[in-house]
Amino acid sequence: MASPAKKDDRNYSLSNSVSPTPPKSSRTRKSTRNSVFPFSPNVSLDALSITTVSSHSEANKRKRKHSRWFHLKRRLLRRGVVPVNNSHPHFQLLSCIREGIRKLNDSNPMLLTKSVLTNSDFEDVKKIKANFDGQDFEFESYSSSAFAAIRMGIGIEEQEFLNSIAPINLPYFEFISNSKSGQDFFLSHDMQYMFKSNRKRDVMFFLSVLSDYMQHFIAYPHSLLVKYIGCFAIKLKGKRKKYFLVMQSIFYPSERIEERYDIKGCTAGRHQNPNEEGSTIITVLKDQNFLNEMLDFGDQGDWFIEQIKADSQFLCGLNCMDYSLLIGRQMKHLDEKGVEPVSTIVERIGKSISPTKKIKSMKEDSVDPPAQGTSDVNYAVSYHASSPETVSEIHSDNKTLSLPQYRTGIMFPRSLADGVENFHKEHRRLLPNCKNGLHIMDGKEYRYYVGVVDFLTRFDWRQKTAQFWKIVKYKCGDHSTKNPKFYSQRFVNFLSNHVL
Image (cartoon, rainbow, N blue to C red; front, top):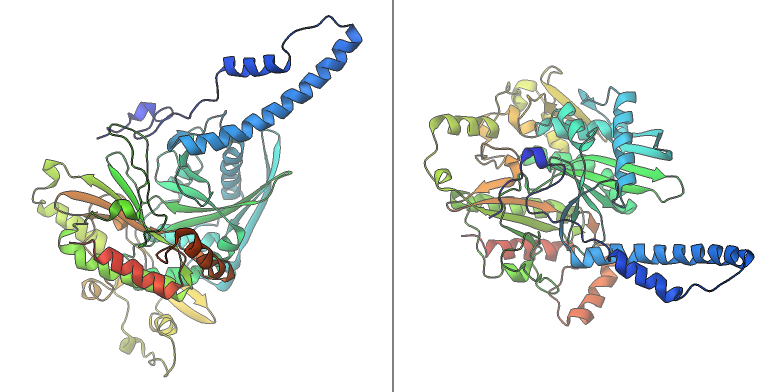
């Protein structure tokens, strides 16, 4: 079991991480040059000048070729987490992102959570132009106030968030995954948050359903969907614009996690060769590796299945598929298996229910019930209007969705204003007394880290075409490209069969 990295060494070392594979040695590069220039002939000064220019051109071509091969080889041969230092190919990009976030925060001090969120807040784009170390770039932040509301709801203080995702001197980390998506993954220096590059169409889709995403947390405050807490885009001069979503890391804190799985509920193409014994390389295993495993959540097993059903049904309603459940597992220490003291249980209850003032009932507010045919969402919107000092509001389609004002550390969002009587109605559970409690579940022998990720792929014409290609490729139909309804049912069934 890996031991946690020392705090003083966090700039240079990391538990379960590996150093980047170095390029070929200087001797190899030298031999390459000698193969091009095997001897040094006697030439005139003019000839030498011409040869020098030619050699520089050849060297530049070899350098570009070597650079492409170096990045490809690194992804093929190495899996792990590496610091993004000044020799890292993404150092400039991440430095500009850091500078953009800080400048945006300085120039827009009112990005904190508003008491009322309107349609314009969801459509808002904050733009700035900046420069870092001679590199001009444009930086954008999308739906800033809406994401600030989510951060507040899950107990993230703004200054803490800023210091984590845009530290002045501390490095970012790159997570080199065995994902086939080709997306980039970067971690904050404290490993709490992850930047993930995304295609423009996926980001625009997510922003279009952001209010629905927030309303799902209103209905299910302990949802296992990953918590997206920021959306940015950056355009370096002479390069294409890149989009990033910032999310909480499911695997935090990660020091003791022994096994990681990415589960889609299918088997075609879903096998990952495990590490050799004693290896410190991080490898995320897949469905075929999980076939003989079981999840023991103790008395929360039934809760887990029901929540997975609710989350997958929500994604099905958005026409989304190809999502995964990330699972991390670590053995509990002996002192973690004992009976919890009363004080700890009280703290856990405080994290799981509301200490805030109860919102008036529908009858007390004299709000008429919804007319026949009105959606549940619109009903919730009209039902929970209340006084401005106790709630925030989201206006959607000329409706108002009221949310309570939360104290730091309270789970997101409205349900915390309703108290104990709605504990089961809103499908809550008793959260563990630790950081990242929404994605941590304790069993008798193990602690699990669980969260649904990568749910921005819609079943459009691209996926409808791909499903036939995958049948040919895998010679079976048990692959990940299925229509959302089938995918959701298979996903739930697969997990249900692996929960004790």
